Image 1 (cartoon, rainbow, N blue to C red):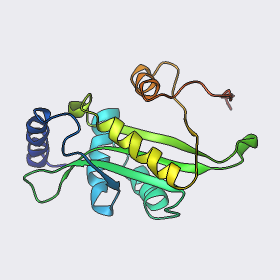
Image 2: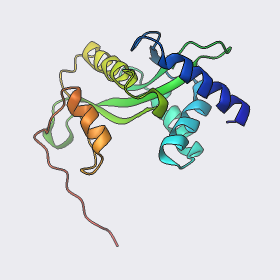
Image 3: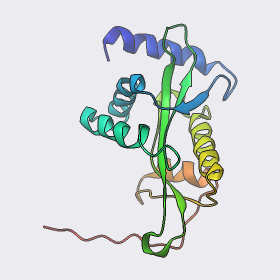
Length: 173
């Protein structure tokens, strides 16, 4: 993202902070034109640029099996031609893994740091929950690192709690 575009984005976000919470947030399916904003947002949050990864995720979750896979973005209307993407959530319906009945899995969620506490994450969470419900799914799951306090607090605040499965792992070196 060019410096001029970044400055315009920051100005749009600052203007939006004065808005009533959740006012103007639109959640929709990702489009190819959103991917540069997704890459830039992820790089700001994680401090790692992963363009190849996000292009691959878009091809798998933004284009294929739209009734099972959901890549959603939250955007705010701006004075610019293209609305400003301020968050995203990605999930899919998984079935019969280790005997689990079909359920919705969230595997990615990110919100522009300047827009946190503005209900962007909640809007994304509710939108993907609605997509899962529409497909007949009644349970949603995710996995959070035990030391990742921010996502843990967010998901707990949305009503998620420990489930019946225990994650196991083994180092392969």
